[in-house]
Image 1 (cartoon, helix red, strand yellow):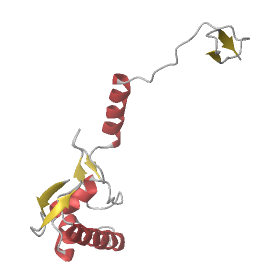
Image 2: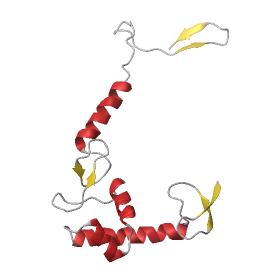
Image 3: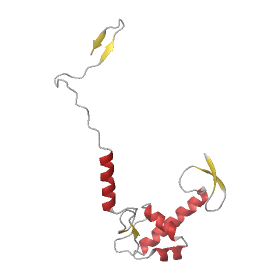
Image 4: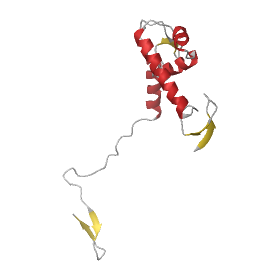
Amino acid sequence: MEVRNCKGCGKLFNYLSGPPLCPSCAAALDVKFEEVKEYVYDHPRVGIQEVSEELNVSVAQIKQWIREERLAFADDSMIGLECEGCGVTIKTGRFCKACKDKLAKGLTELYPSEKPVQQNRDPRESPKMRFLDKNGNRREL
């Protein structure tokens, strides 16, 4: 366990993982997220700057929630981010569908699925349990 200063309030706390926020600041951030989500739901064509000003949340925080795919916007919404791969405008996440597919294809080529090893067995022979008896003789069941 690591002790850190909270990025929000400066208090010391036991850091486990995630953003360096104490439990009370993390809970306050979750409340803000719910407020932003409700506001965007009620105002589907709103811009990031307007959400930021209305709810007193930084633009960077709103963009982080969008990148984390916690917030998604309708196709006709004014909000859009650039895909980190090709630069096309997207509504949520870090990559567009084409870049996601390209990355997935690249990963499957790097790590192909393992095929089971073919064994030369007689298909009529059923698997048997082999063991040594008390005298050290091999036995099959």
